[in-house]
Length: 447
Image (cartoon, rainbow, N blue to C red):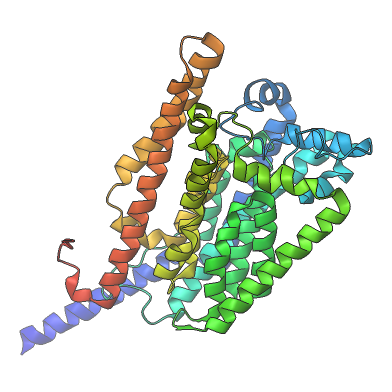
């Protein structure tokens, strides 16, 4: 009996010690908030420092990089559109400007101000994206704590702190480069992150409006209305209400339609041809980090329309099945769709991948389920590293050709797709562990 009592006392002491250690490791909200503010300020000041002190370096070596800016996100083309607009000429008549009228209206006052104001706007936009990502991480962690079945029984719960999530975006070289060349894709990132932030908070009308704005800025984020509508229809991820789904989709269609009517009244119907139609038909075959440009250079004209439909449907067709499969966690479906957009859109850039990678900390609990992290990371690193080298050999030295650069983009795309498959499989495995904990030690084999 004395031995049993001693054993029980020892177990109780160990439990108390563990609880004390956990308390010590817990960071207070005030300290975490301070870390987040420091991270946001440091990331913003770093960008401003480079923009102000090294403008020549950015102009000569970065602004023309096809990996960072595309015909639909280039700041140079936005400046051309602003110049035409200042002369009273429609910016969509020249065949150069292919960005949303929202950007034209937003940057029109800045066109007449010194460049430091524009630099500040782009830096502030990047900082806002980081803050929204941090808030999404924080909100999901709070929801998990309030949910009974938040995790696998007996597992060690692992999460990413909001300040760390912000730093992973702000100090990502891909995001820094995108900000330095002032790619307008950052405003699409704001709209996407805002849609997810408002959706997870239950502010569905704002989430739908943000999704509509993102669709006008970059077209492909329109796919996010599927998971956003499921967020609107769910009650703690359990009960789905079909009428709420239809209402959210209807509100999205109304918001998109109203914006379209406003833009037609201001710029004429040609804006639609120069933006949405331009993106869908892949008119400009300038090399980029995507799959479209090289294929449609080589394809015969009589087959062009068919393969454009095939390529575009390949990207857009994932919206409904991915959202429905992960309908009990629409936020995860949104993260998956952001990755699909990054990989399969017609004019992708490194900034698209930066946003997708920055959303992964939202599901830090899936990291231990990933099986091909090493392969995916190496493919992405090789693709990112080889693209500038092969571009230099092709364009500057003339010792290579387009096949070199396209090979790098294929490696880059395969890295993204492998990460997407791995992430989806990780979520499926975790769902199985949560609902059937007895299968945790078993190997799942598909026959």
